[in-house]
Image (cartoon, rainbow, N blue to C red; front, side, top):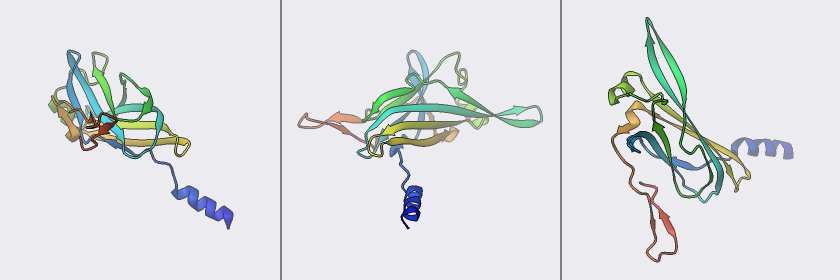
Length: 166
């Protein structure tokens, strides 16, 4: 009975990262050029440490008479952070080495572009590694926009307030 209970509990009690991702990814002005950006923030009182992000992009390429899906990694400016306590704006600077270099807004739709995001972190509450993923299709990518600041100081100046709706 104890073994069966442990197996059932282990099956349904998987640790989860409890991360909220921004509704949209942005192609925003950045360092004299452009960058792909999205945000994430923990929404429970979990202490996430050693958070890592991996981004892949998929394109649908028309190669003569057939359609081919191409998957490429995107480099982020900061791929790993020590602690994820407020929010993290993940940035892929679009340089000449980027697969997104030279693409206009229409190209994202023509190529059925999708950005796949994978996050891995250590959760002190579960004492285990947690993972979460999301994706942004070409319809979720907003061009020329900027994120608004999502945290502010409390009125008594004793704490920081993170506004998850932003």
